[in-house]
Length: 247
Ligand code: PEP
Image 1 (cartoon, rainbow, N blue to C red):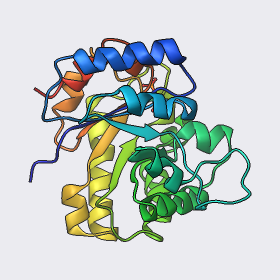
Image 2 (tube, helix red, strand yellow):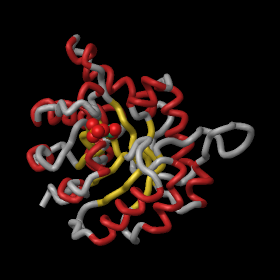
Image 3 (cartoon, protein in one colour):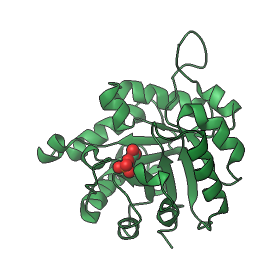
Image 4 (cartoon, rainbow, N blue to C red):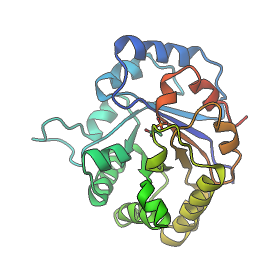
């Protein structure tokens, strides 16, 4: 079964009203491969602006969501509030949140469950540090991160997994096609064993980490790479070429 190619753009804490309007305008006017699902994730402050200006068919993601529906949680945003604003996706478990904000596997899993229960789809990030890779722990780290979610969530139909080796994020050091494919295949195998054959067959597994228009074509040819989560390059016009890299 062919999985629909997926491109996520993670703006992180970048952009302002002017630059985000410009990115949205360029995306609206670009000739994008209609077979690709495209989701962009601006900072929370610009979610509504993005949704209101982005053309239909292109979706918007939050970069985070809290695991409670409402209440006394200063600074947080709930899945209900995102849905209410037309936001259909959220990124969760990004390594910058795991490392800098010290979000652990259990918290990421709890937020994933809350997001799904609240009707959002989730781009669930996982990935190892350079030290863990050098110790040969890549697959065990990634599957430990995913297992925390599998313990709480049985239906993976609204989850897209993003494998993002930490050493490749924002460093210009992209994983080789072989390194990425090897981990993607291991994740698919793990999904088959720990979730279901259906989840293994249908779940999109994205690669993220210094993806550019120069390396995306080669990576897209790998059988278990179903798209990309793009950081820095999603802010540039070359993002359109990455979206079209599976043609
Ligand atoms: C990311 O933040 O998800 C990412 C992959 O960043 P970059 O493409 O800049 O490495």
